[in-house]
Image (cartoon, rainbow, N blue to C red):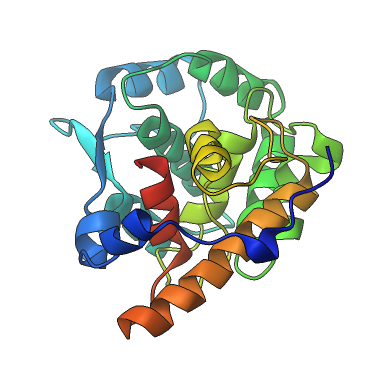
Length: 232
C-alpha cells in the first residue's frame, strides 16, 4: 500500500473539542494503577539498579510523576536511568505485566548496552525523533528485547519532562487504530513501525498541535493530541 498523504488529514472535530480541557487535567494528572510490589520484587530479584521502583503505599503513577522523575534524573547514573525505565514500564503496563519480566531479564543480560541505548535515546529525544527512535530500534530491531515501539516511544516522550515543545510522542496500537479508523491514515499498520513512520507521526501531531494552538489561543502540546487519540 502506498503511504498515506498526511498533509490532507484533519483531526476530527470531536477530538478537537476535548482539547478545551485544562492541560494539567488531561496530561499531568493522567494516572495509572501500578503493580508496586511486583516491580520492586522483580528488579531486586534481577539484582539490577533502580529499586525500589515505587515507594511503599504508592498504588499509581501519573504522567506528572514521571515528568518530575526526569527533572531530578542524572543521565550519567545507571541507577537513575534504569529507575526511569522501570517506572515508565510500570506506568505503561498498569496491572498488565505481560513481557515485563522478559524486559527486565533482557536488561540484566547486557546492562551496559541497554543503559547506553537509553541514555542516547533520551538525549536525542530533545530535538530529533528520528535519532531518538533509532537509538532504541536501529534497523527496526529492538536494542532491548521486547522493548518495541509502544514502550520505547514512552521512554522518548517522558524524556521531555512534559515540555510543550517536546517533539516525541507515544505511539502504540490504540493510537494507531484511532489514526487509521477515525483520521484516515490507511497505510499506518498496527505495530513494528519503522523510523520513517514514527517521524511522520510526530510531524503530523506537530502540525495538528500548531493548528489547535491557533484555534484555541493557547499552546497545545502534541501529547494532548496523543492522549485524545489513545482514548477516542
